[in-house]
Image 1 (cartoon, each protein chain N blue to C red):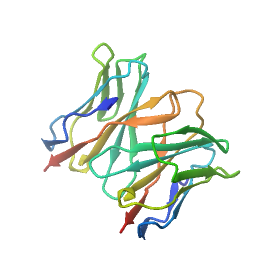
Image 2 (cartoon, rainbow over the protein chains, first blue to last red):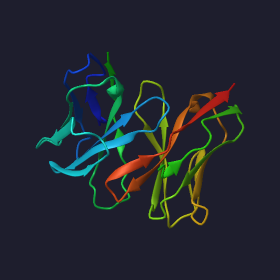
Image 3 (cartoon, helix red, strand yellow):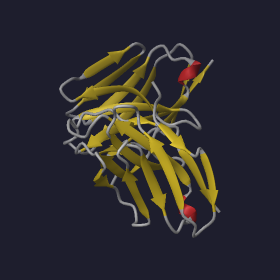
Image 4 (cartoon, rainbow over the protein chains, first blue to last red):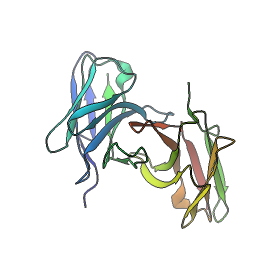
Length: 115
Length: 111
């Protein structure tokens, strides 16, 4: 079975531009979460979606937005890019959000460089 | 406010010996913990988890110990292998919505 897939793998943008990152969860998983990881830190939570609804949002500005589609894939959008947005963006999927003892499975990430 | 802490940024161990990675947490509401391993240019890979109703969980060479009173958990790898060289993250689900991660410990297993 395919794991979590993300596209693109790498991206270079300039300040002020907009970017869209894509994620396909593991088949059967209905929850998708997005994380940002900068060098030397653990992943930081951005959004969680379950059944196409936002279920959680981390401490990120409104320039960050996301959505989930009927097939449970997801997009993360970042507007008005800043140099500080340069990071590895990780997508994780899980079966549901109900138990609280879920395991999230991560994709390979999209490395974004903002110049 | 770091809810999950990994105070050792790096650890070097000889091949065949035991690796012990530590993690402390501050939120007493956490009831499930996970360890992830991350190689460069890859996403984190789930390694092992433990529920707060247990104090130990074992999977092959990997064992996680949980001390709830001390709010401390540790990952033991025995025997350590060069392929175990990676960054290890401790994580906990926060109200079932998102995971809170520690900053990671870089493990180097020397041949």
